[in-house]
Image 1 (cartoon, rainbow, N blue to C red):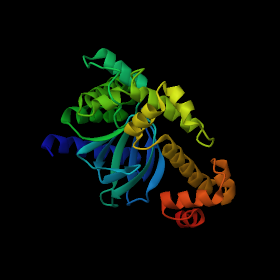
Image 2: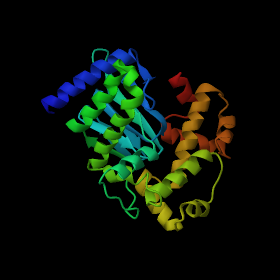
Image 3: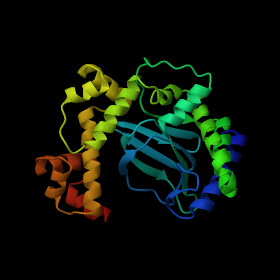
Image 4: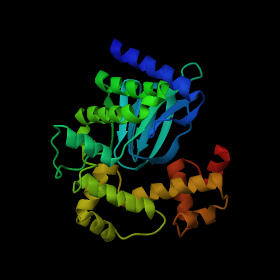
Length: 296
């Protein structure tokens, strides 16, 4: 790692420590910017990863998307260009050297604005790409991230300068080796854009059954094309995607609201409690009751 990048990361680490203070995810006065701190190795946590850019300045993390593992540390950044059900775990952290990261949420309109203002040529007919990728951080990108974070020390400049620095961050990501995976999520008519609309539909209707033909109509694709592009983007089929959503929500409900496994299984869309318990065990490694007792 270059001396310049080391210096930039050291500056960011000090800033995150100062503003985060304790473990957890911390919103900042800059809308869409969050600081994350963990002083211990965490349990694997399953959740929906919304479109975002995340950069680690200390520690390491592993994210599981279907069967794919993304491991990244201080030399890397990770981008999710659509909503994805993932399991994430901080795998390197201690009280002396906590895991420190910065997350910036992404909207399609922000990406479109950068594309329209730049010389980046786009084509809507490109093949869909995986909607999650890890890249090596470049000094130019890190420089924009540092300038954005430093605005927290001068909040009066946030309204004018934060949008400019955020735009610059996305510009450098789009210039990177996986930039086309991000640009495609914003271009109306692209395969990724159409899959994104199907993903939004499944998330809204995760607890109801759907026919694959209905999804292919929404995407304006054949059933075969939908399956192929959906897997290209998410690493799973539409049914597997829905199953992950159901099981994630079931775990959340069991932890926060109800301990009745049958009731929760029904609420998230299962008709058979035994099937629910089997699939829950497969995803989380323990049957529902045992898993919840362990987490508590």
